[in-house]
Length: 158
Ligand SMILES: Nc1ncnc2c1ncn2[C@@H]1O[C@H](COP(=O)(O)OP(=O)(O)O)[C@@H](O)[C@H]1O
Ligand SMILES: [Mg+2]
Image (cartoon, rainbow, N blue to C red):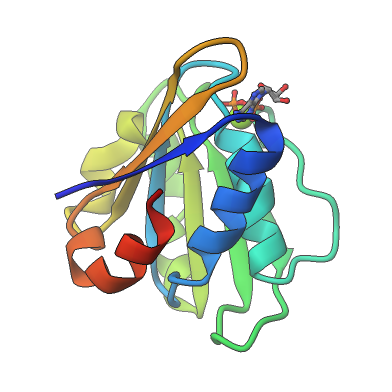
C-alpha cells in the first residue's frame, strides 16, 4: 500500500512535510529516497516545522546527523535528521546508534535511507521522491509503518 502526493514547487513539498509531521509518533523512522535535489531536505524542513523545531534545518550531508529539539503536543521531543549519502560502511551508521536515540521520544528522518535500510528493520516509513519536471515532485509514502496509519495517510495524500 502506498500514498502519493504531488508537490508542484518547493513550498508545496515543505507543506507536505508539515502535514506528514502530524502523523508521526515517538520512535518512528522515516527513510527518504530520491536523487540529489529531489527534495529530501526540503521535505525535512516541513516536518521540522510541523514538529515545532525553532532553529533552521540545513542539510546534514557532512555531519551525517543533526538533532533538533521539538515543541509539539504529540510528545516527540527530538528530530534526528540524518544523511547517510557519504557513509562507506553500514558500521558508520550503526555508530550513530539511531535506534537507541529514537526510542527516547524522538523520530528519525534519514536521507538516502535506502542505503541503510537493513539496519532499521521493517517497521519504517519510506518516502520516495520522483522529479516529474523542473519543479514538480511526486512523493510516495509506503513501508510497514504506513499500513498502521492508513486513515491519516488517506488525508495526507492528494
Ligand atoms: N517541488 C519541489 N520540491 C522540493 N524541492 C524543489 C521542488 N521544486 C524545486 N525544488 C528545489 O530543488 C532543490 C531540492 O533540494 P533538497 O531538498 O536539498 O534535495 P535533496 O535533499 O533531495 O538533495 C531545492 O533547491 C528546491 O528549492
Ligand atoms: Mg539533502
